[in-house]
Image (cartoon, rainbow over all chains, first blue to last red):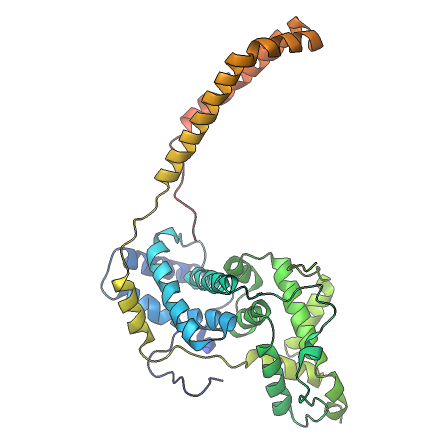
Length: 216
Length: 141
């Protein structure tokens, strides 16, 4: 589902439905390496191709973190500038996609840190759960259809801290395996799993009051 | 005090949650959550964004490629400073150290200890010297 007002037009990056399989085959890595080499060699159109291929991914990662269109635009430009300047460090041992996502993530994280915005939900947060942070007007028991429940979950996902929101995006929308997410974020695989587990458990808990309707 | 690392989870609980969200579960709540996670709205770059990026990159000042040589040079300079400092300290206080060590362990033991240290250094240093040109390129971002 895409938000209106930001037409995809002809400038769409990697389609979420056309993502490579979880285990990138060797030929995909070779293609990544070839593209990187072409950019480093200054081949005409090579960097433009790289931008067009990965602008969607970069945008998704940064937007999930900062949730501000203008900041997202500036930070994406900064991320691609860093990609251009540091591409000589890409060795082709992992997919170019995860390398670029790593750059995008670090740019967004630094932006939030400069603004002193916490990126992760603190563990000892005096017990305030996701359900308790939902506004008073949120009527779970009034949900009568799956569509309504899905919409409410989407709203709840938007209220998650940046890190949890981004991890859910990378895992469920970008179809990125845990190991690759670990490379992108610099977090341990166990930590990523814990964040995903807790977030999904909290989201699932929001549906509990309406199970009586679903069980019918 | 807040922590940023959540407590670890049980692997079985993780696998159970994965199965529930994979479509294998018949629970409607799990199905709704799975659908919500895979359909969360995302924004896309606006038209012309790629062209903006290319203009931004083209306008940016050129950055010298860091191949690590400066870092290596500074490291060697630092090691040299430490070595000179250690040597100067040994010259200044070596006599006192020898006296104290001889009193504590005996003169013969101290001499044998120094000989052993010299043997270790002689066996380690040539290998280090032969490997001095095998440093790899800087790590990836």
